Image (cartoon, rainbow, N blue to C red; front, side):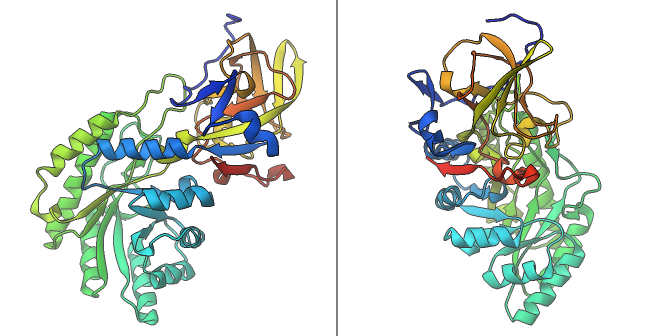
Length: 412
């Protein structure tokens, strides 16, 4: 192994991955077996998803509903699994509505959030009986007009832009001026207007941020969310039928990241549930998670097609890249580029021997999967594994860029 000061650390490989004869195993199958049909490919472990959901349910209060935000990963077999495991599904477009319909999901357990819903999308969702989380006064009134035209009673909730955010969040969704939701000081007035129409009133959706690893920050935000929901319900003088508290649960991606302490979060939430005000006593309370449920269960496998030296540095050139794993390249909102968890799948339990850059096949310097990590010696034909690839991978990356096409996906 080299002790070169130029080596940069990798993010932590999620727990649960093992080796067989020195090779990475995913869902009971070796990396070479999974890649036999061609690379690049994504492999998602069903067992890891099952285990994550079971652990989450064990940690959270029994009355809490767990929803899956399908934007994290809508791959059809995985979505069908999540439709069975989760209590509800959250979508952000008519296209995603078509996906959950194809997965056989109960559309009464589906909610639709996101700014800029077009009239055709609202019409499709309202006709299907999906709960629409309206994001503005204008969107609420459009939804009501469309429902009147259809002759149906719409299921409506109001997404609230809270007057707080999730501290330490990788992506802030609330607090300040936002395109998401109705500002908290206007939400009750809009709710009165919506309820007066006789719609099926479904309550509030309050989502402050995502990708947090600090349990205390999550606990504080959940507490503030419950307080805000109570305040709005008391302004309305109507018990709240439902509250979607959003998500915020993160996963470790980078060096130094530690897993979120869900036992601590669950215990604090149970304590709050034990003293809910009358306004929330009968509310159906849910959290909405995406990456936390599926992110660590996915691995992106790509094959080394060239090994080259340039001015004293080694480059392992793969047949994959940012067109499939944009986030791992550091080009998906990262301020400072840091290395995702990555390994040479063909030599998963071998010690590091060299410092090498892992790059993709695209003709751009942005296409870098790992910046000078210490790795086992790897050659042409070896497989590289990029971990934490189960969320915001295949569908969040520019697969059409430079015409290389999409990666294969599989649930194993």
